[in-house]
Length: 146
Image (cartoon, rainbow, N blue to C red; front, side, top):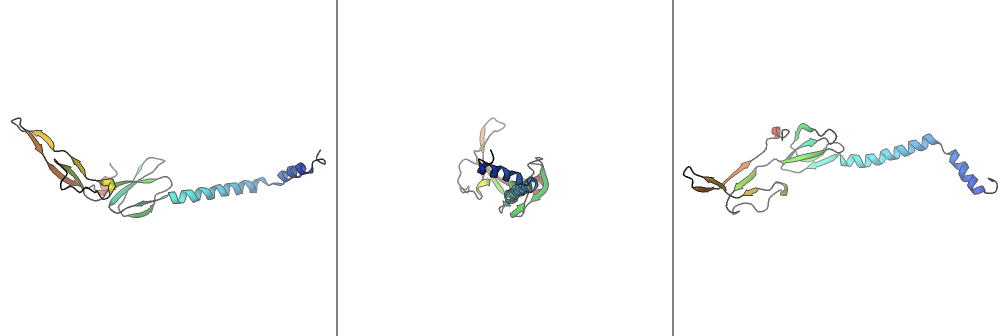
């Protein structure tokens, strides 16, 4: 039957000529190359000015002890990422209206908090509205505990 259909016979004899080990090594090498081309760029993360961050390991879900305070691009590892916090002073307002509050937060991620005035009662039972504002900033050494 092989003599009557020479094209099928030639294809079948070509499969037996393929060397298994070099073909598997070539496939494995190509897979590793594709993985490296994806994994290496994903392993770098950037951080903007005015922020500080800790690195979260995605496999162990552990936060690193090191706090990154310098802006720029850093190698964090495949799948890991930064948990960012503001490095600048942040404002909290408890006021009646928003006059005097910067309406355009910079950067947008850390906008000022504006709430209504605090309601309180005096010792005589009279209601008071207290307007206050304060600023806060996170210390880099306290970030891991958050």
